[in-house]
Length: 168
Image (tube, rainbow, N blue to C red; front, side, top):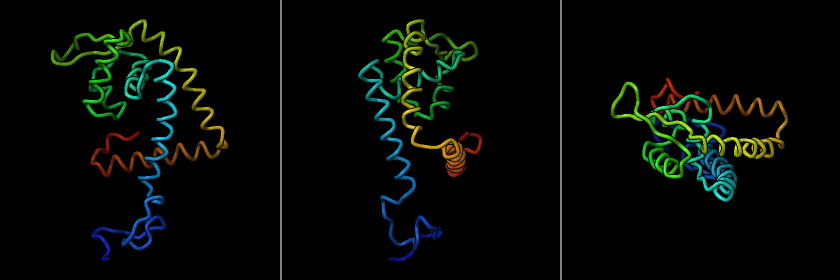
């Protein structure tokens, strides 16, 4: 099998003719992400009736100021449809309020409702606990290195997608 155009042999991909999925970096990142998300999702769904998209919307709204739907899309890096569906579910549950955007008649501003703020305050300690349980397997130096590595990979992926202004 010939090498692929643009292939660059690396320690992760030796000869550019075959690929072992278990060693493929994008796959490994995806598997870790799915495992961690599933651990969080199971708890959020069981305890609070929230899926991951709903929690992500609540998390960015819980950081403070009201946000436009577009800002939520950018901050969560979820697609428009997923954010819209999550917002609808959160509004229907009374956890998020939607108001007119002051500068754009077609857009809305989103904020946690009082019930949403109360739920957010209940979830955050559990989320922090789950994060601590996950991170306890790493030393401080490993956590710092992981943070740097994830930031570098995120920036590189953003550049590859032509979104240099995004990606942390």
